[in-house]
Amino acid sequence: MRSVVAVAVALCGSYVTGFLQVQPASAPRRPDTHMCANKNLEARIVPGFVAAAMVAASVLFPVAPGFAMQPAAKEGASSVSDTKMLSGAASTLDTGSRKIITRGVNLENADFHGKDMSGVSFQQSLVRGTNFASSKLIGSGFFDADLSNCDFTNANMNQANLEMANLKGSILKNAIVTEAYVSGATKFEPKDIEGADFTDTFLRKDQIMYLCAIAKGTNPVTGVDTADSLSCN
Image (cartoon, rainbow, N blue to C red):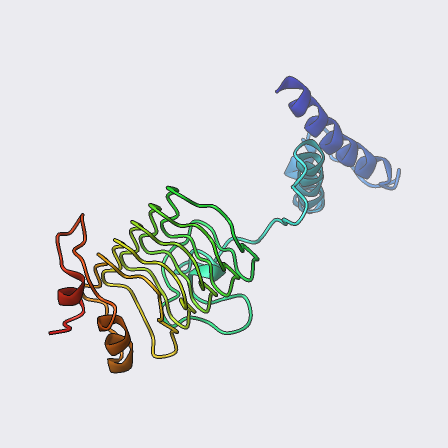
């Protein structure tokens, strides 16, 4: 820590010293007056001093590649990602905080078995064949994501955003898909929903017909029959 302070002081001190050295020798000086009392001089020194301090910080604590210092967000919005996507289409439910945003990432055949991925946004990502078995996906976002052939066995997907997602061939056995957001554009054609609970997840009639045709079993956690959660009867 002492070395850190020493370098910062050296850089800042060098700036102030250099500034004073380039001042005209004939410039009037008031005796027994601290240089910071001169408002004009202070106004010119302070910005440079701050800049030197920032340079010192960047040298001592380099920022990882791919990241950059961002200005503070305006009051009322914690970050850009909380309100809209950086570019391209945006989910109508893409609000609230996110722990991680993986927009447009290729995560094919990844293994997230048993992981807590709650609140993570996989918006517009390629997640084909990924293993989400027994994972916690509460409030996770899959807006416009390709989830074909994914395994969600025993996963908790409560309040997950599945708007425009492709779940063709996915496995939702014993999954909790309660209060999930499914839009009309969602390709909701999983191949196995035995024991899945879809309570309070609103679906189109054709989506319900497809799911009811393969609905069976009871969710081991909620105790709700899959067919009942879809109002098949």
